[in-house]
Length: 83
Image 1: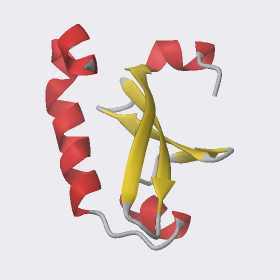
Image 2 (image 1 turned 135 degrees about the horizontal axis):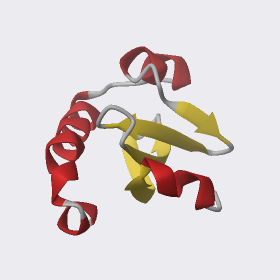
Image 3 (image 1 turned 90 degrees about the vertical axis):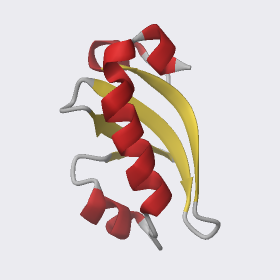
């Protein structure tokens, strides 16, 4: 789990998780209304978390209301990701 590697990320990651669990998005526009800094990269949604200190790349299945996390890391690692 990422928060075990970077304990300072825990509060931000849990806030993000709470928002994800309470979200009810029908489409990318709905998601963008809640996460204004989210980016769409191919089939993935990239979330900026913790004041842009961390990134989460995830698949969002709108119909089933499920978010599958592909990658979590510090902001500076993001450019090295092969999404």
